[in-house]
Image 1: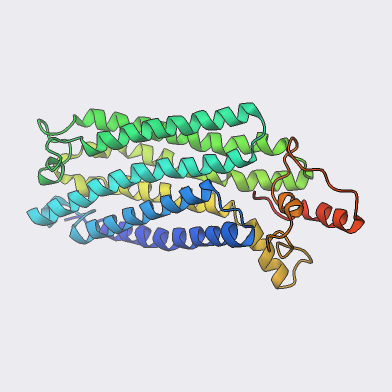
Image 2 (image 1 turned 90 degrees about the vertical axis):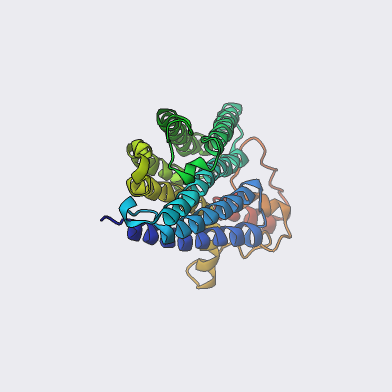
Length: 327
């Protein structure tokens, strides 16, 4: 008898805690500290909700027998575990699609070059189109739909051939990797067109490229896609792909959210006396549109002119240009 449910439960709990913390900090940072809660933040909250539902479904599945060998389970336990696996599969597709959109809209906030904008739009459009297609294939892969959990996934005569599902998963993994690397490399070109010191540029590029970290887990998950054809012992054989699916989405949410938290770190540093400046200025309080702009990325083609008078205002604005690296 074999049981891998313990490792699945540990990952489940870890990413439940981590993603809840980082998304909460992102909401506080973008909604209260810099007062710039955009569509990228809204989509990240939607992703977190879907991922939390995924983790809850997975947790329920583990209680029924996900990760365990078939001979350890009763017929009802096997059926219920397969039902939760089915739900998790759909929530995984939805989460990976929406997290890519969130990162894409975040980068669109910064882009001023037409080429960069269209690269992002095309990447986001392809993610949405394939995500929708993959979602509906997942929903209707068996006829009737209940054959997925009443018998087992991929059973001949009831479900789409296993080979088709595996190919779809390979294609999805490839597209996810391409999107991740696009969103990881493109910030370097975007930031280079902004007016900021070299050290700041490098720091910004590194932070924004966190979004590409998920591509590593996508590649590892790619290795285990073939386990989806394991048939009757599906729940045990697919433990690895379930684990890496959890890690892929969890790291994507975490990395993309951490890239937005510099104003929070600045505020903490200012409050404890490590720095003399931070988001505790009129921008944070929402009173100065000029300084509000300067606290984000400085876009070379759209930056408002810095007034020459009064001198004190000019000094404050210039000092604040390095105060934040998120829009």
